[in-house]
Structures are given as structure tokens and as C-alpha cells.
Amino acid sequence: MNTKTKHNLLLPLLLFAAIVLGLWAGFFWGRNNGRTELGDALVRLASPGSKLEYTMALIERRYVDSVSIDSLAERVIPLLVEELDPHSVYIPREEMQRINEPLDGEFDGIGIVFNMVPDTVVVLNVIAGGPSDRAGLRSGDRIVRIDDSLVAGRQIPQPQVVRMLRGERGTRVRLTLRRADIADSVVVEVVRDAIPIKSIEAAFMLTDDIGFIRLGQFARTSYQELLLAMLRLRTEGMRKLIFDLRGNAGGYLDQAIMIANEFLHEGQLIVYTEDRRGEQVREYADGTGSASELEVAVLIDEGSASSSEILAGALQDNDRGTIIGRRSFGKGLVQQQIPYADGSALRLTTARYYTPTGRSIQKPYTRGDAEGYAADMLHRYENNEFFTADSIRFADSLRRVTPGGKVVYGGGGIMPDLFVPADTTDITPYFIEVVGRNILFRYTLRYADRHRDELGRVATVAGLMRLLDSDRTLLDDFVRYAASEGVAPDYRDIDRSHKLLQAQLRAYIGRNTLLEESGFYANIYPVDPVMRRAVEVLDAAAGDATGPEDSGSEEAESAADSLRSACPGEAPQSADGASAAAAESDDKKLSDHD
Image (tube, rainbow, N blue to C red; front, side):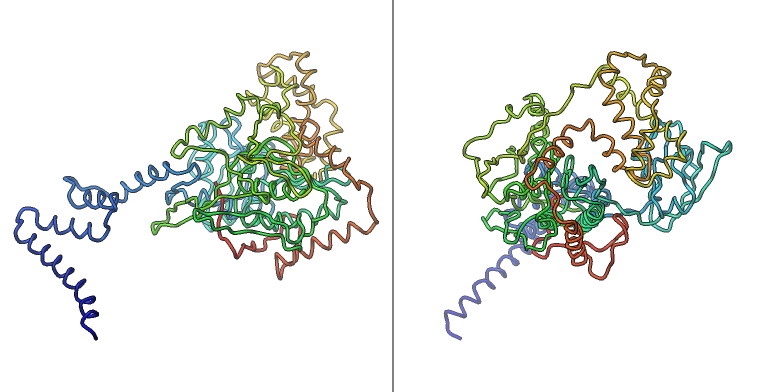
């Protein structure tokens, strides 16, 4: 070993020894606070330049009173994250399950859909085959007690009722019920179990050849659910699709990519992300999609965010289908969930999303100004954006052109190809009164109680429509009920709002059947201008004529192949009954769940 090498090795060792000796000398010479200063010095050596860590260590070691550093951290970390972008967020341990539940695809509970009307827990639907179904609960039951706790007539907040009903699978909960056809209370014991959460909220044939699918969120099972829904609708004659993403705030990125892949051709760019170093991750269609030739209209609004915008932007920039509705939210930031040892997590923004033409989806924001960011929707309303496209301005620098020559703009959200304003023409003071006081909804529950047997036999949208069409007195009966509840009939307003009133009555009754959201949207369609515009566009699309008789079976077989590829080893049993594991993207385990 040469002399220079020896010096290179000895110098750091001597320096370290001098530091240690100095620290020990300080310990012996400073009787009053030598131990503390030794600790402080070690802290400074361990984390040079970390002012925050040094401050926390000083508080822990030297503050006059005993304090919990963990509790301080729980308050400090959110304040730090608030100074970043609007979508980076700290999630405490106790919030993790609640936040992840909708995206993970299941929760532990009793398997009912309920509502509080106004201070009574009313069972709207019982999940078939679930714990409550096995225990004998029925639609229309009123829950009086949960175990020993009285819940009827106490105006308990709905989230609190949810917490009382949920619990670990295998545990028991005793429910005391009031049932319409029985004088005495009914007591049932329900054993909690895993309850699946469906992200496809509605899937049915809207017309003879147009299917309607509503996706509520991008959860772990969304891709498989979509394949199953499209396979079923194709067997029912679907040649065109309305894909409703309104109000869909996002979810898992890989699900949006796989769904976009179903509609695109091989080699077409779906989305790319770019981090602070300029490094990009690009996702392309692989040519295996079963719906690459399917005519599609995608519905969006200001509640469509993140994964919804990625999907809509991918189709729009590749000239696939028509985007209809209002400008989307504008969330184009990628969050990566980083866990802490105590079960909490940090969702930290690590990249930005861009559409295939290079548009940034993210709307402008000021770091640390969460209040201003949240006020964006109010500003849109005040700027008349919900009612006219002319109120929306884009800078020329944000202009992009798709391969087909369509002009699109970046700078915040996806601007639809066809803007449909919010429609308020049929909203009258009478309508506002009966809806605002919850009278209309309460009537539909009353109606469902009176017609429980007939509604319970409804298995298809067509059957529901026939049943409701047979009731010629629905609106008149409702007006009499509203009068008994203190809202006198205003026949001029009723005449103006009658289509809206009729559609809402039918829609809420439809939701109170086994069809749930499909029953709702099938009946709200006549007064939904965005759905109606989508039907017009698809009916007028080029190549509207039906192809060979067996084209539907070929498309269905293609969808079945995609389903078998996504769900190896499992045969689909029904449109909402399969439970194959979600196929996650191998390239990027990022999520945008906000």
C-alpha cells in the first residue's frame, strides 16, 4: 500500500476520532447540559442540514414537558403537504381503509343499500346472495335498532349508521326491523361477510342497437366488469355504445389504460407521464381490443377527473368516437402512494399526465392555495361555462391537432367535441320545492312499499318500463301526496315540469328495484340532454346500416377472447357475477385515486 493511499484512509478516521473525543470532552466539561449537547451534536451529525428533523429532535430531547412526537408529526406532515400541489395528500392510518375500499372492490359488511328518510334507515335493496339476503332482510324494511342501539327517529348521520353496520367478516350484528305487512318487530341476525363493490353502475340497452354503460370509478375490477357488460350487451344486440363517465373522479391508472386499449388500434398512444427529470413513460394500444371498431360516444362533465380524462383524451386524440357533455375537471397529476410503518400513507405527486397529442390535462393551480383551487367550479359557474361553450377560452399556445385534423386544446380538462349545456328550462318553483324538501324521493319509497311484489318481480329494463307505463296515474297521485305534505299544486308549474317530474319519479322507483342504477338511467334518459344528444350522434354516424347478421356474434366472440385473456381460468357466469382478479399494469403501479 503506498503512502498516499494510507493518508486517504487515515484522514477520515482521524477526523472521526477527533469529533468523538471533542464530544466526550464536552460531556465531561459541561456538567449541567453535557449529555444533552452530546445528543444534539449527534443529531446534527446524523442529519446535517435537516432543519425540520433537528427541530423535532430538539423538542423530543429538550422541551420542558413530555410530548408525543408522533402526534406532532400527524399535525405537521399535513401542513407540509398542503404547501405542494392540490392532489398530494397525507392519509392517516384510520382513514386508509375508508379511502381504499371503493377502489379495492370489496368491503366487509351486511350487503344492503339503504337511505335515511328522513331519520329512518330504509333498506332500498338487498344484495342477492349476500349476508342480509341469507338472513332474510327485504327491500322496504326499516331498521329500528342495530344491536342495542336505537337508530330510528334519532337523526343519526348516515356515515355513523354505516360504521355501525360494517365490521369484520364473521362477526354478527342483530337488527330489529319494522316490516310493512307485520305488526310486530322482526329481529334478524346477520353474519358480516365480504361485499363486492361494482364500478359499473349501469349497463343496459337504451335503444335496439345502442348500449349504455355507466362507470362510477376506476377500481381494481373495472376492466373485467366492462368486458362482461359489453359481452352481455352485444348478445342483446348492441352495435354502438354510450360510455358515461360523468361524475367519475378517477381511480387506478392501469384500469384506464386497459379500457382505452379496448377501443384503440395497435400502436396508438394512450397516455404518457413525465416526471421532474423529463423522463417519460408511454402506454400504447397493443391491438387486442375487442371494441376498436365499435361506434362510441363518451359522456363527461366537470366531475369527470383523472383516469376519466385519460380515457376521454386518449379516444379524442386518436379520433375514436365522440366526446359529449361539458369540460372535465382538469386533474392531470400522478400520485404514488408511499406507505409509512404505522399504516398511514403519503400520496405524493410524482409526474404529470399528457394526452397523445401532448396536452396537459392539469388545470392551473398555485402551490399552497387549496382554497383557490377548490373555488374553480364556482368560477366556472359564475363565468357561465355550464351553459355556453363560448364562455370557455383557450390560449392559441395550447392548440393541438389530432391525426384526423380535429383541433383540441390543453390547459385544463378535456373539452368535449360536442358541448351540451346544463338544462334548466323545466325547473320551476314547484319542482324545486318538492325535490328540495325530499318529498319526491319519499313518495317513490312509499310507492315502492305499495308495489313491492310487482317491483320485486322486475328482472329487466324492458319489464320495468312496461310496469311503469301501465300506471297512468303516477304523476297525479304524486301531486296529491305533495299537497298532503304541505306543497300546494301549482298547475302551471306542474305542466311545465311534468316531463321532469315524471322522469324523476320513474327513475327513483326504478332504482328501488333489483335493476338499481340501470333502472334509474333508463328512465331519466328522456330528460337527460347529454344522453339524448349521444343517441342522435350515434344514430347519425356514418355506416349506420346494420352489417351482416352474424357480425354481432363475431364482436361478442372478440369480447369473450379479451375476457378470457384478462381472466385466465375463469368462465364468466353473468354480467355482474364474475370475480376474476384484476390484471395490473406491469410497467407502472401508480394510481390517481383522489
